[in-house]
Length: 217
Image (cartoon, rainbow, N blue to C red; front, side):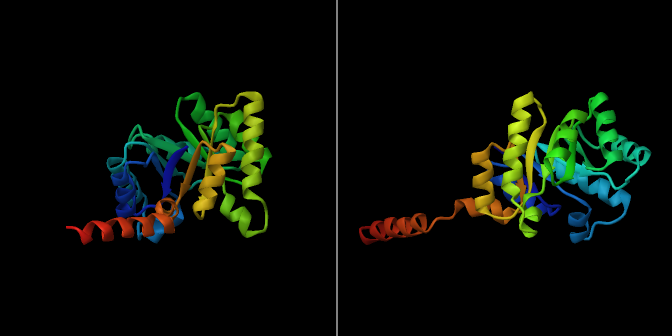
């Protein structure tokens, strides 16, 4: 399973990259705003900085909700770097844009997916990635992991190459469960990734090893 980090914070991206396990980055207008990055030119420049930090894919989101606007933005975004994946919302105009980009050989990430039907449309349009938001589904007492499982089944049934990118991952068990189900990618905050490091027996075992070593040295 690929590990993406969902942030616009360069320090967090570098920390994940330095661990040697980072496969890519996803971000969105909200995460950009959180870092104080506003204005089209500043946002484009920040995407370039992210691409310079990581080796893998970087999902860059369009702001427009009409077909022509999405196409214009996407054409600009792909000029930043070959790493750029155009992030497009799951709306009618978005599906049309995904098909257009797919036909041109541009990679896409269909975002804000909350149902199997939406995921099916994204795959048929040729999306590279589809992003079901499992954390937000959990927030409204809906089974986000069940959605991942259903999408996996349907994609396997018909041989769709679209990769399932589990988004809105909130904690360690989301990651583990997505790996069990067969999600191709997960994206979440740095804390959810570094949380995989933690186990009380690792901490107590290391403490014991060091204590025993220090007794005789």
